[in-house]
Length: 342
Ligand code: SF4
Image 1: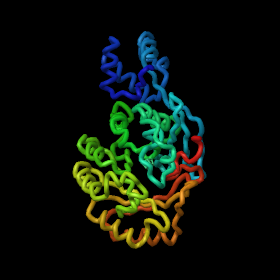
Image 2: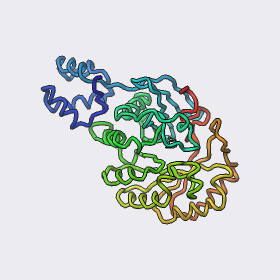
Image 3: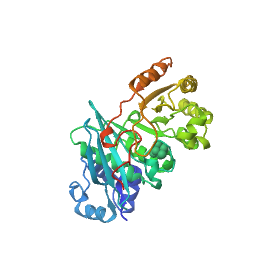
Image 4: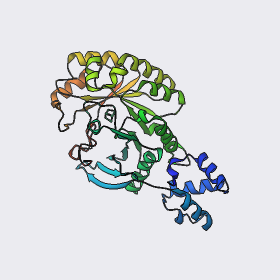
């Protein structure tokens, strides 16, 4: 199969071109066509010689996923069902919010982590996405947005990003490189269920990005019920790792907490959460549970949500109540893959 250029860092492209007997400066020209002019056809790269264009066409591709289905929510959130070259299917979501457009991307086909509340978990795990299958979602979103600017990227779609560590890290390097997508590190968030060894590894790379941790309970036994990963990587160990991660990065860690009626918003849950977060420099994002078919959980009432959020106000950390977006199209948190795929 022809190599996808969206898989390559600029240095690697230079190396490939030198092997083809081309000059180094051609790489910059090609990257400019791809990332500034959004050209995916080598034949349209008119600043390159005819011979080079043919050579590139024979050796490389700039493949992006095909859109199988696109559904727009009443709030403007758009969910895409995409098909990859091997016919695997993934989803990505564009969430507009004022001048901001956030893209939620997938890192795996399915997921192996089996979080109880998550629709993707029900699909099981098929495979990791290649680097270009991650970067090409961003490329596609930029094309889809047209005149509007893509401002933020979150790895919160299908898959546990840190279980696809190498490809995700390389994709982030391409997303941040000034000759490629040129995204600011503070606009890229990786959300994890808490894969401790990979969080430590990430901290040591020096790669700047925002880290979000899907917490959902600060009580070990309850978190184990919701997120089996907690049996392998318990809360106490997770906290130590995150404190260490925080020392090595400029950004505060965000904890995501899905509020589930009669499960994780009671008095003992509040007490445990305040204790867990009390000495970490962090942000807390709470979001209400979105109904997923076949799952037994219920959404809390407005009064219960208010009560839970007010009890968090003693934290020195910023607490935000994230509104669910795209609920009507199953594009909200935890809902990806509930429809469409089968
Ligand atoms: S919440 Fe994330 S890590 Fe857990 S099963 Fe779903 S996609 Fe995987």
